[in-house]
Image (cartoon, rainbow, N blue to C red; front, side, top):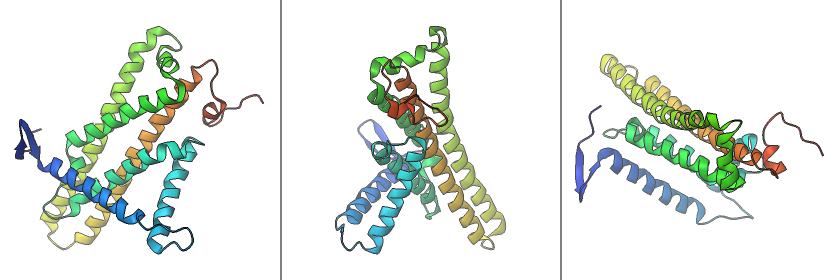
Length: 239
């Protein structure tokens, strides 16, 4: 795959259109967060505040369904991930812009962020000794397979999002070229739905990977915390 041409350079670094669009999305998100939270009220919340609180509660409920009691810890990361990827997928609908997630470098960076977060939250939950010990269970001979699994799922996370968004944009372009302006609305609706679905899948997989890291590390501790161990569905513990 050919690399995108640089729009300008910062020293030896070439800044492509993907990077500029990503910076723009980050600026929009930061400005939107500031505007949405600068006048919060406990007594008389407005319509925007009510909608914002509903969205936050929905994300918190999704996290609590996977890791009970850990919603407040993971909500900033998972919520931001969902929101950024959804907007990055949808920005391709703006004429003259392309989705940053249609560039493998962006999805690889997001997957790397998830990879690092899995280990960060896992070590934070269980301690670095217990967390690293779970890679040697049930036998140290399985260590290479554990490491290979970590790398392969990170690669799959990056390629899946990149492939889906790139194919989605190409399919929409081909349909518009063939049919002209006769079917723009259905195509745009499918684009919106697929973009949101892909953002949800990426964020959910990230949440599941983080939950697995936190639970695996805690189970390797001799004094494993009941709160984390009980977060795994279907397990019972003696009183």
